Image (cartoon, rainbow over all chains, first blue to last red; front, side):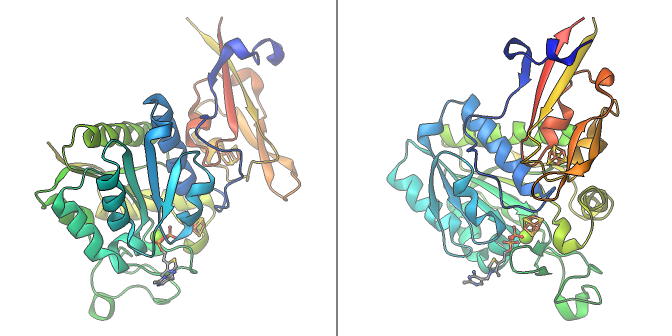
Length: 253
Length: 73
Ligand SMILES: Cc1ncc(C[n+]2csc(CCOP(=O)(O)OP(=O)(O)O)c2C)c(N)n1
Ligand code: SF4
Ligand code: SF4
Ligand SMILES: [Mg+2]
């Protein structure tokens, strides 16, 4: 069959979301950040809340998220996205507010902010991209770096005696009274992408229902700093990250 | 009921990561021998007859450069 018989507007089943801008993303080829941006755009479009959503971008590779989703944005100082999200949500209680953060941002310099925002039960959504490394600054060890994992600051692999233990901050915030929904997802294959999209939708609905803080960790690959091709990095993530950071809901009420 | 599909790749925006290639259940997609103006080998339908329009490639593409079309046959 001639493919031009198929490629017609009436046969379109997967278009690019209108909430995504035409700006080419600066992310490395295959980076998980791009998939998560796309899912946020699709959920915002499907919920028809484009003019009522405010994103808080972090310091980290996702700092430029505001170039890619056509919504209102603020950009926070390193680790402070939950504090800025708190202020934004309290000033504009009818808006949907989400903080988008990496593991260096959320689980290291911003530990105080995330713990207290979650403990206060702010009606915000937190998207936490855990690629177990400081991507933007050249691959330094993060709190979430696995034992034995080589980074530019742990060239012989992370050692517990010297560098402490990988931090499961998601399990930690699940203990707090203020969180209503805490889940860990991934976006390396179609099934996981679909689950992550459902989780994001649920999180946005929770904030409309004033249920408290919804926290979504996405186990991600940073192929550039892991020094692997993209497909290999996704496989490495499945083999090494998932056993320590198992996917699934941790709390849902 | 069977479906026949086709994808359109924005080849200039494709970064050649290959994530779509391994997630296509029908081995429709490959990376081209040619590169785009940024030097990336872009994704294309190497076996267009095999595409069912399932959309798996588009869903996993980090740069959202694949659009999917599908018809019933
Ligand atoms: C106050 C402050 N300290 C340090 C930095 C340097 N810095 C920029 S990004 C970053 C870490 C980013 O890692 P992560 O949050 O995991 O995001 P990723 O790039 O991996 O997505 C650091 C330490 C900074 N910009 N500001
Ligand atoms: S450095 Fe890592 S996190 Fe940053 S864009 Fe590249 S792959 Fe993504
Ligand atoms: S997943 Fe997207 S960016 Fe990567 S090779 Fe396929 S079409 Fe290109
Ligand atoms: Mg990181």
